[in-house]
Amino acid sequence: HKTMFKFLKKVAENQAVHPSASWLSLDIPRTDFDYSKEVGTGLGSSVIMSPVQWIMRTFPESPVRMEMVDGDDIEKISEHPFLNMINNPNPFYTYETMMMATLMSWNIAGNAYWIKVRSKMGEVLELWYVPHWMMTPKGSDADPSIFIDHYIYNPNGVPYRIEIEDVVHFRFGLNPENIRVGISPLDSVIREVFTDDEAGNYSASILRNMGVPSVIISPSSNDVDISQEQAKVIKEKFTQSFAGDNRGQALVMTGSTKVDTFGFDPKQLSLSDIRNISEERVCACLGIPAAVVGFGSGLEATKVGATMTAMIKLAWTGNIIPSQRIISQVITKQLLIDFDDNDDLDVVFDNSRIVALQEDKSEKIRRLTDGVKSGWVRISEVRQAEGLPIDESDEIYLRPLNLVEIE
Image (cartoon, rainbow, N blue to C red; front, side, top):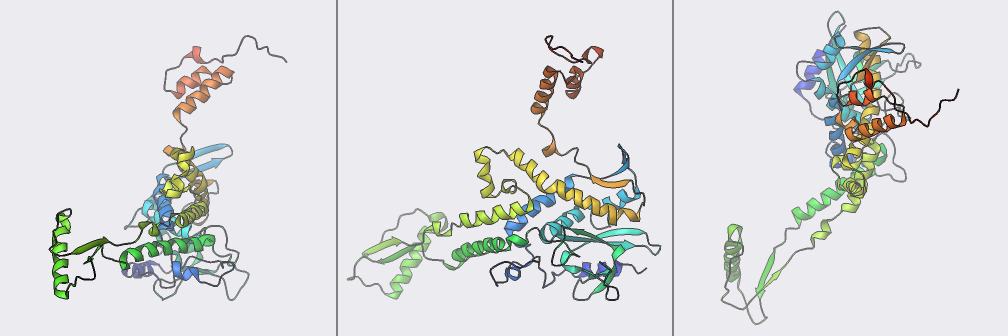
């Protein structure tokens, strides 16, 4: 079996972005304009990368775990060759780095890829992330019934064939126009992304290209004539007197002179309403409240009752946890099989220490206290939850005397 190491080495030597890289896969209705070409990979769009980077930073907080499922019993596996590989995928970066890159492709393009580097004996030695635009799943020309026969790996215009068993392919659903690949979560908001990019370019262009003088110094009447030489002297004198640390100094003119301020209204640069729409829709497609990212449109919501804690929890339940479920299933099916063929083994993400998902302590105590008062929670359970000692006298339920058991 031919190793992929030479291919990966070629990528490491030249990581130039493929010129035709794009993440749009569906046609935008009622327009022939190619928004995909203008937006490109989306990596330069702040409206995309802000929520995507939040996901990239947050997702790795949940470590990878293994479980052995036997009926209703679940045994946690802490030592296994698979865990050693996933936590140390290759000599150059960690699991966290690889997963962050994977999530970037997953959330932008709907497809993410890992390549397995094997030994001569076929054992998986290393895992490498590959940018989504460098990989393409292919069917079989000889047998059309084969769903995916191999992958084409194209790092720099030179295609290589990679066998299906050497690729871990993460898909965001299935693209109806090409069911071998996933669909980008951001396909439907390509126009909003383009709009936000253009709004940013517009504001920057005004500031860059409309450099106008802050004041205009002119004769106070038509009877006064200022020569070019005098104008030059006045300009230099004014600049020296008021530039830098000299701002606010007094200037005495010897002739009849008028000084007017000149410029444009800064409100012309305000495109917040347009940009808010882009922020809201991109975040909606990713399942993240805009406030979590720090977008102004989302922060408005926190002023009308919603807390940031609740917003962060929504981001976990709307994006991180569903992604964990899908990604863990793919890893189990396409990678764990190389280390263990036990069907009872599952790959999961451990969220037990995620602060955003922990129940509020006061709320927990209130719930348990209500349970004690209602007679369905023992006193020992409340004390145990608070870390207090318990004895046999606490193993009781409190029920009102006026309640009578009826058989």
